[in-house]
Image: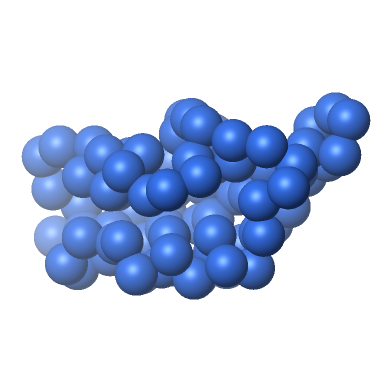
Length: 88
């Protein structure tokens, strides 16, 4: 069984959200077996910045669903979308 790298777009609820704190909370919300390899940030509009964590997960059925659900449950997260997925 291999591993998958998924780049996930996480939109905060507002420009006032502390992105460093949000990153820590996303790392703490990861399901078992998943880990974050790094974060990128992208300016969206009007001071709003999207986070793009790259998450390494086991290649199992369900794919990124558990990670997406965990991130969506974190406070101050407006939306979660998979940006790209690839095998390692």
